[in-house]
Each structure stands twice: as structure tokens, then as C-alpha cells.
Length: 301
Image 1 (tube, rainbow, N blue to C red):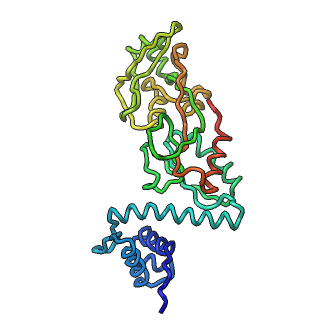
Image 2: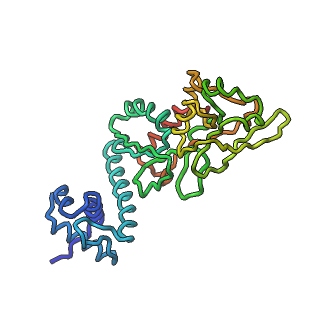
Image 3: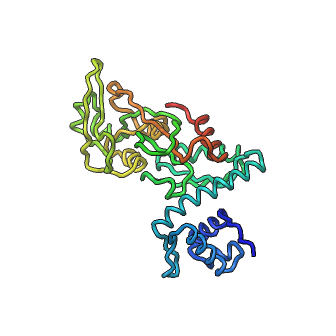
């Protein structure tokens, strides 16, 4: 009998389905195979690779370190293969599931309001958005794009700049009515300055006077929070003063809910907004369309 040709992509798909669904039986039902066929395909894949990918000692599959690494790469390979086939068949029309990860403030105030326009333009795309202020691993979280606000750490990922937003010191009118409006950075010593509980590139607030002298004030208020949206809500309660980006608090300032403070001393520093993704020139059509849309719609602050 002639030796059966190895279907590498087929083995990958069976393995990925088994991991995603938590077992061989569930994968077999989804793929219309028998559990023994799924088990044999995974065993054949392990034999060809010379590495154990899953531990079968429990009812739920447990990935080995080699299995976890292979799973991440297999997911990408299958996605690229699917995109190539769809593109060849349909002229690279953006379609399929687009997974986006972004911070809570940017997602709440900028990204979510933009999604209806993007989906109307690309009706064959579905979007899955995760909001978190934690820095995620794109491969581990299976995200296509992460939108990050602030300085980027060095990595092997590709970054595309979307916009910039000016930093601004803000307070609620109620707070300023009770405690007065500071007229210089020195006045801040008598105010409740709200900072973040996580490490930032700089924990100090810079100020520049007309002569170009720079003063840095470190916030030491009676409350700290872990993310920008929580900080915005805290400032809105009238608890104290904080420093956030205009892209985050611009609508509050326009509505009078927040008031800029010490603008004469604002050094004009900007917070950059980047889209970060895996890969370079060979992006899936849905990812490229999403990035192009953000660059088109977002305006520098």
C-alpha cells in the first residue's frame, strides 16, 4: 500500500480544535470524526515532531510546554492559510473575526464609538474587543491587534502610530470650589493629587514656566487607582486633581464636568497611541482594513 501523504494543515487543525474544545471527543464531534481518529492524528503529529504535545492523564487535555508553543504557531498558520484561501477566492475582501485588545479608557471613549462605522464599511467582519489596562501577549491572547497608549517597550511586534494626545491636568469644578484653583505648580502642595498604583515611565507631573524652567511634581494624594478610566471617574467625584490625556477626558472638559488646571505651565507633552500587531507586510485583509480605518478616523489631538 502506498504511504499516505502527510496532511500537515489537517493535523494542525485537529490539534488546535482539540485544545480549543478541551478534548478529543469534543473535537471529534466538531470535525465529524471519531474520537479514536482524532487521537491517532494527534499521536501521528507528535511522532512526526518527536515531541509530546499534550498530557492525557486527566479528562481535560493539558498542554506541555512544547505543545503550548506549537499551538500558538499553529493558530497563526491556520489563520494565514484561511486568509490566503479567502483572499484568493474573493479578491481579499476583509472578512472573518477580528480580535482587538485595548485599554479601558481608549476602548470606552474612542474605539467602541468607532466600531459601528467600521462594521458598516466591512459587513463581513466580526469584531471581538477585550478591554484591559494590562499589557497582553498577542500570541497568548490570540489577539490580532492591540492598541496601546503611551511609550512602547521594545519588542518583535510591529507598531503603527495612530494618533497623539496632549496631556492635561484636570479637576472637577466642585473640587476647585472647595479647595481653590492652583495658580502655580507650587500651589499643588496644598491639593490632593491623585496618581496611579502601577509603575509608569515617569511618576512625576512636569511643568514649564515662561522662562523654560521645568518643575516636576510627584502626586501623593489619598487615593491611587490601577487604570485610567478609574482615575477619570475618581476625579469626576471631586476627590482631587489628576493628569490624563485629552483623548480620554476631552468630552468631560467640553461638557464642563472637568476643568483644565495650570494650562499656562503645561509643557505640551503628548501621549502616543499605537496599534501593535504580529507580522509585517502580509497582514490579513481584516487587520489591514481596521488599521487603515483607525488612521483615517482618529485625529491628532
